[in-house]
Amino acid sequence: MSVGTPTTFAQLDVAKEVKIDHDNVRDLLERYQTASNLEEKKPIASTLVREMAIHSDAEEVSVYNLFLTKNMVTEAEKDKEEHAQVKKMVYRADTTSMESADYDQVLFNAVQAFLVHAKEEEDVQLPKLVSMLTQEENTKAAQDFLKTRTMVPSRPHPWAPQTGGVAQKLAGAQGKLHDKVVETVTGREFVGLKLEHGNVEA
Ligand SMILES: [Fe+2]
Ligand SMILES: [Fe+2]
Image (cartoon, rainbow, N blue to C red; front, side, top):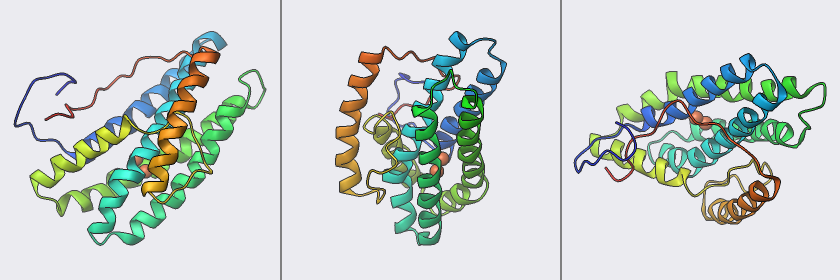
């Protein structure tokens, strides 16, 4: 289902919505690797950084908190730790000049770490979570994830609170404001995404 499809009783799948983000990152990496010049690469790199930052924070605040209520404490802790590592790498990419000789490698390392983590979520953790959810709970989890995506910062803040609780939500709200300013001032450009999410109002 594409964004904007009017439907009252649509069911959503949190695993599918999470995978859409992962697949968009996979697609962006492919586009980055086949881009022929810096001008073409720049907005793709900015979009990669934005998508990885938004996805990671949104998961922590919504999906990983749901893990905790379903006796998946070990998974939640492992994933948050992996996110902390990924965010530092994404932050490094975000603060490295694209003109520098090692930029491609810095960005690639961040995306690789993100994708290794994402694959385990897809293969192991999300199927386990979904198997414990009713269809109604699954739809609600997907809605929570999608709504949270719209509230979190669009640039990595690796030293912000990682608890997934109120502190992270507040830091996120402030960070988002800051990021909007930075994006406006620096005139960052982004590319479109291949895949769209389900309808959050379902
Ligand atoms: Fe994750
Ligand atoms: Fe993920």
